[in-house]
Structure formats: structure tokens, C-alpha cells
Image 1 (cartoon, rainbow, N blue to C red):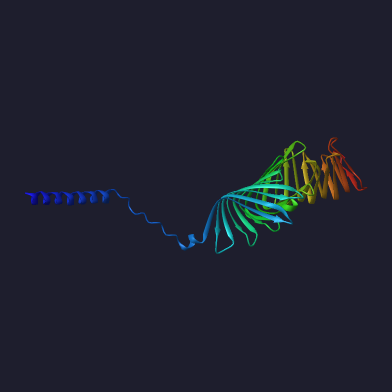
Image 2 (image 1 turned 45 degrees about the vertical axis):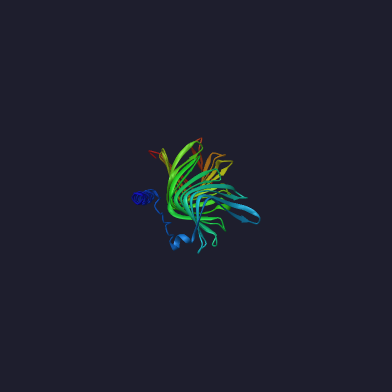
Length: 306
């Protein structure tokens, strides 16, 4: 009897051990394998909220911030996402910019920014798909469509070149837009557009056409000079031709002085209005009076019925 009880107790113990082992096997966590890193991943260091700065002559002239930075161990490139930056030129002021992503070469000191938006000297906003920056010289370049907006100016063109330290940039081709001069808006087209902060000047070059209601001006180059943010003088050069409300004027050059409110046509100048025709080396047009006169002796007047 005692033997039967012992055998029964032993069987019960074995059963309980097997049951507990089976329960543990079902409940224990599965083994999780650490994913293997590729050789490429092993060569990258990922940093969040990264910063980068460039220093010239003991002064920081560029600051970059990125939400994510990927530093490659086997090369000098840093891949950036969510970029904000500032370029500080002691001469011309500050340029703020943003980019969706970018690539900075710390050895060559250059960068490519994608999804670029920049604020140039608190005067112009610039948008383009991609732009290259030489961090050593402060020069920029790009070949995509560029959109520029300012207080008195709005335009689009293809390709950009610029010198940040000088506050200068050029749109390279197919430029068109609008500009406000003395409270009036003009539409314009040209091959290129250049802005120069130091000269307070912006210029249009190549097949320039400027339109306002009742007036069209054509030339090869036009330069607009400002003073305290307001246009002071406009110079048109090369095969100048103006058609304004029935008055046609042609010359090699024409200068519109806003303070004197007059236009001077020079270089084989010719003006025709209704029954009047003037020819001379220099012809002056008084804007407010609507009157022309010549400063050289060659002159011809035609009258109807004569």
C-alpha cells in the first residue's frame, strides 16, 4: 500500500513538473534578434539637432542647424534634413535661409541645399528647388527656376549666380516680372536680371521690354538706380525705342531723372509726335509738361497741310 502511495506521489510530481515546464515554454518571451547593420550603416553617425558653423578671421560668418545630420565616416560629407541657417556678411548684412535637405562637404567647404527658401538682406525672398553654396567665397549658383519677391518687385527666371558678401545676384535667363516705380507698376522681360546692393542698382540685359498702360520701351540694357529705397534714375542703353501714347522716340541712350522729371534721349536721337518731328544729338522730354526740345541744331517741324 505504501509503495502504491509513493508511486502515485512520484507520478503526480513528475506531472506537475512537466505541466509547469509546458506553461513556462508557452509564456516566455520570444527571442528577438538584433537586426544586423549593413556595412554602409556602420559608416554613418546620426546626430539630431546638429549645428555647423564656418569661421573667417575669428568671426563666424555662417551658422547651420539641422534636425537630423548623417556624418559619413569614410568621406567628408554630412547629409542634413530640416535645415535653417544664417549667413552674416559684415559689409552687406544678414541672409537667412531654409532647406528641406542638404549636403555639406566639410573638406571642400561647399554645400548643396534642396527645397531652398532665402531672405536676402531683408529686401528679397528667393525660392528655388536647389542651390549650391561655396562656403569659402560666399558665392551661390543654381540652374533651376528661381522666384524672387520684394516690396516693389516680383519676378521669375531660370538659373542664379551670386556673391553673398557683396549683396549681388543675377538671374541668368528668361526673366519676367513686375516692378513699381514712382507708384506705378511696370511689366518687364529680359534675358538677365542683376541686383547689386553696394551700388543700389538693379539692371536688365538682353532684349529688354518694359510695358505700362499706354507706353512700351525697348532697349538692350536698362539700369535702375535707387536712393533710400526709392528709384532715382533709369538709364536705357542700346537701340532705345519708346512708344508712348502716339509719341515715338528712338536713340542710342535715354536717361530718366526722377528728381528733374525729364528724359534725355542722346545719340542720333529722333522723336515724332503727330505733325512734329525732331532730330538731334540730344532731345529732352519734360514729363510733366509733355514738351520736347532739342539741344542740337538739327530740327525739322512738319505741319499738316504744309
